[in-house]
Length: 267
Image (cartoon, rainbow, N blue to C red; front, side):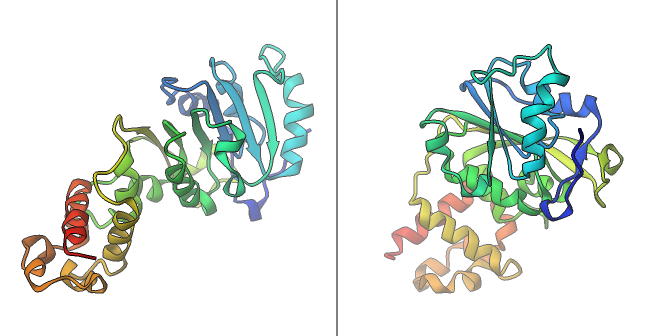
């Protein structure tokens, strides 16, 4: 039995074993005993995860893939431990799940060859659950992977870059060509790894920080004194040199400083 990739689910099955192993090996295996793989398909990445010490849970929306993983996959990999203590298969949509309930508030690393159409939502979901997600690695459309990893001063740098890097150290690991997928996507893919910072709490109100970052980039060509008008900035505050900058010029730390200044402005 094999599974046909479904376009509406954004499925592109990885066919290169070397790359699959490389993605699995990007996990540091430090600080968690659980790994959650999103969208395993036919288990090309899963088999390399099962060689590691963590308990592997896979979450798959495609019922055909779930059947394959339950029935065929264990028979094709008799050398691997596929017992229920080591390997759990869940059918469902990751974006609708409560990570804390699934793993009983234990730490869990997230990994996957992510469907392009929901990859940024997967990152935001991991950020929401950062208290329980010490590590996150996987394959994205190259452009999205670069955006997450990008530093200030670039046109690619944006909301996703700042919010991710506020809590995680991000590393762009390698690029993957379309030819190693079935069916091949139209663009290159990129693999990145996020490792949660030792101190991942912000010294400012997080909701305000998110609002400042999102509002700044929503009008990214404007200087901050223009794009942040809705925060009713005082004239004195507007004279601060930071407000003469555009959002892509600010580092994560400067966005934190900016949020503190706005908070002290008396919102």
